Length: 372
Image (cartoon, rainbow, N blue to C red; front, top):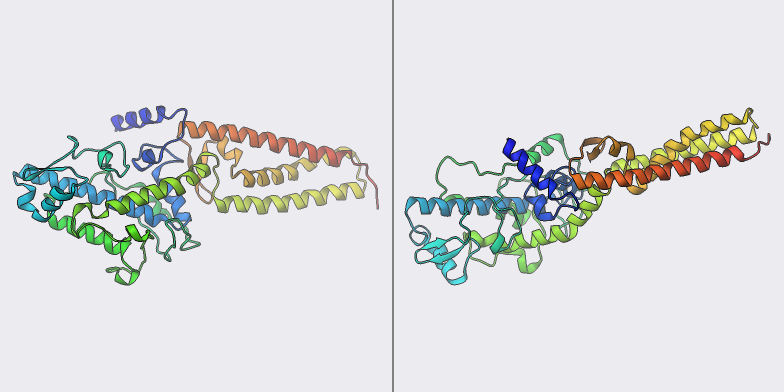
């Protein structure tokens, strides 16, 4: 545990002056609020978590394949003897798991069964991070990888715990067999790539949208490389579309959309109360005039809520080192550079609030009273 914590600290220190990359988030090297768990919740709010579930499931399937090749080598058998169809395919077209050497598969990385630091789905730096998928919610089929489906779904504590406990090691008590790989591939195909009517033993639809060229596997069935093209497409789609929005949401703000909307409503209501009180004091010509200084109370609440909605950032939460996960639930900000960014923005928001409150209070204090 100490070694793992030390490694996490080293990774965090390497990002003191930059935001994390998508590769680092997927490989669980980042800390809240820009870790994999928060990214999953971000996609879940958009109804697009199935694309991340697919990537994680394919990642685990590929690690299962690596474990199988490792077990075959340990047993003294060859790939040609144990799986002639795959040996012939890899010999003719190559494979992401290595190159064919005589009757066996020669891996390109000596640390074949280890964990890679990069989950980018390319053959030279293929990820070794194994993971099980967090429990997704059911929803309508999306028309794009990040289209809105299942609007109104709210992540539950159970789902969040399942997502946060996703293991990084494939538990197994026996050697991996070819049938294990086939069963894993079939589960992924029926869950994500087949129409909902063909989903086995499930009433939920987790089918993801893929462009026609990547919608169907281009390699023969039951070949370990079967989902590689789809996985690479999903990686690039998340990296180019969802991840920048995720960083903008969590590295420059600390509120969820619902929480920001609540602040907008509260801010407008409080501003109406403050203005009503201010005009009442003016047109009733209440004395002493210093009583008008108490208007700073509703004005402060109103301006703070409105500016927090505009910036999607609550400076009070930031000063306490908190960021929202789901509406009105928070966790501690532990990513160093994100903490620095949020603190700077919180100071700026606080200055804006102070300026607006002072201006409103002084304006209504300076207006001469006139009893109607």
